[in-house]
Length: 81
Image (cartoon, rainbow, N blue to C red; front, side, top):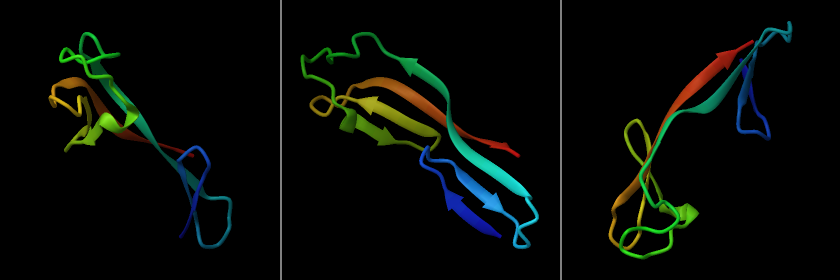
């Protein structure tokens, strides 16, 4: 089995015999729960893209100053041929 990474982040799994047997595995966001005021935190700090922290089932978007959670992402996998 061979795997190739696509530019969009998906992985294409191809059989060893090159018999056109392929499976595409793509990471997707299954849920997003925003919290009010997600341009700035309640403490006044500006939020940046590096405020994303991984969790057991996805990620949390939190303030780097006061560590208040601003939103939650749940991730999953989509598989298709």
